[in-house]
Structures are given as C-alpha cells and as structure tokens.
Image (tube, rainbow, N blue to C red; front, side, top):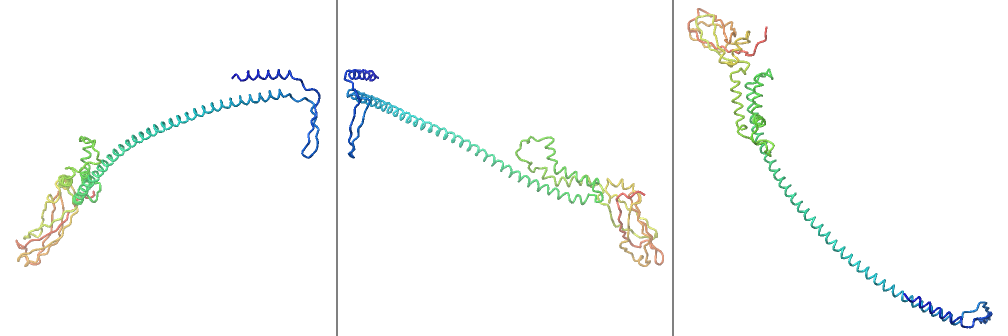
Length: 345
C-alpha cells in the first residue's frame, strides 16, 4: 500500500510548518471555576502543543482512520471471499458426502441383495436336502419295519424247532448249536454275502437293505434246513411204544422189538453200542380168548432189556388151572426207553 509514504510526507510537511511558528515560552496558569463556586488555579510547566501540531495529529488520526476503514473494508471483502469459499466448500463437501452416502447405500443394498440371494439358494438347497433326508428316513423306517416283521416270523419258526430238536440237558449240544447257526445264517446271511462279495449297491443312501427274497424265504428255509439236517438225529430223549403180543401155550415169552424206527438213523448206530440202557415196561390190556378165560392165566416177571438197538420184552404166563391153550389171546405191554448215553460203569 502507498498510503504510508504519503502520510510520512504530510507529517514532515506539518512538522516543518510547526517549526516555523513561535515556540511557547514560560509557564502558564489556568484558572478554573468549579460548579461549586470554588476557584482552582492550574499551573502547566510544559508548554501545550501548538494548533498546527494538534491539526497535524487530527489529520493523522483521520488519515489513520481512513487507512483503518480501508483495511477493514479489505478484510471484510477477504472475509466475504473466504466465507463464500467456505460455503462453496461446505456445499461441495455436502454433495460429496451425499454422493458417497448414496454410493455406500447402493453398495449395501447390492450386498444385501446378493446375500439374500445366496441365503435363499442355501435355504432352498437345505430344504431340498432335508426333504430328501426325511424321505430316506421314512424309507429306512419302512424297511426296518418290514425286516423286523420277517425277522420276528423267522424267530417264531425257530421256537418249535428248538422245542422239537433242541437238547434240554446240554445248552451247547450239537443240535442246539446247529439250530443257532441256521438261525444266524437266515437272519444275517444276505447282509454277510453283500458285505463280503458286494452287490454293486454300495452307494445306496439307505441305512439298511430292504426285505428281499431271502427275507421272505428265510422262515421256510430255516424249517427245511433244520429238518434236513436234524431229522435223522435223535432229538427226543425218551421213546415209548406199546407192543401187542399173542399168547400161546408157552409159559416163557421173549419178544424182540427193533428200535430203528423210533430212533434217528444218524444216532441209531451210536445207540447200538450203548450198554445198560435204561428201559421200563408195564402191562397193558389183556384180551383173553374163551380158552384163556377158562385157564385164568397170570402174567409175572415182565422184564425189558435193550441190546444192540433191540428191545427184548420177557415175561412168564402162569396158568391158574389146567394147561395153557394154543390160542389164549393177546397182551399189550407199554415200554419206554431212555436214548441218552448212559453213564459209564
């Protein structure tokens, strides 16, 4: 700014003009009358400034005031420009923030839409897998019920087999082990064969295999297999029978009864080697002819014995009066033989 050099020139001009005036000399006294009526005398030792100096100071003050006003105006204009720039920046910043907020909102919405789409896809896949698993579980349950039904039928058919062919005195006897082995074969035989040899259905989603022809034929097969393996074996400990003997004129009777028809063929060869086989016999009905009634016979000494698989029944006919006729009638003898191996002597 060029106001300062001009002011300096004006100040020097006024200062030079004041130097050309008459300087004040001596002390001055000023009398002042106060409102109370009191008179006050003031003495000023230093001379007062001349009018030119006062005018010069007033001019400088006005000049400085003008300079201050110009500076203030310049500052106001600069402040206005700064305010306008700040307002423009704020407006631009606001627009940028709004744009960023919109972009962020669009990204959030786009991300939410993608996430919703993925969640919907995952939900649909999960529901599909859940529906498939429920179908598989229901099918597993139906298969389990069918297999359980046929397994129960198979177990029910094994009960009469154990009752018919089982060995009650020996839980681990041959017949019992055979029946248990047959039962296990018909229960899990198809699964064992499938596990060992495979059937090309290893990727089946079902936990258990469905009932097949093996399951349906297992009850009948179990009965037929047990009958085929054990029908020729002795599965009853005691065999009984009633033998009818015709009475003649002999007093001593010996009747031989073969036990091959009563004892299993596979066991009969071993039975023939048994000695001291337990056997009991008792008299049954006696049907006498007219000649026999006249004699009034008495039966004594009924004694059974088993040797080499043949039952021998011995008894004595004692006449009450007279001699024994040739056709005296017939006699029934009931007997029971223990087929179990007798204890060694």
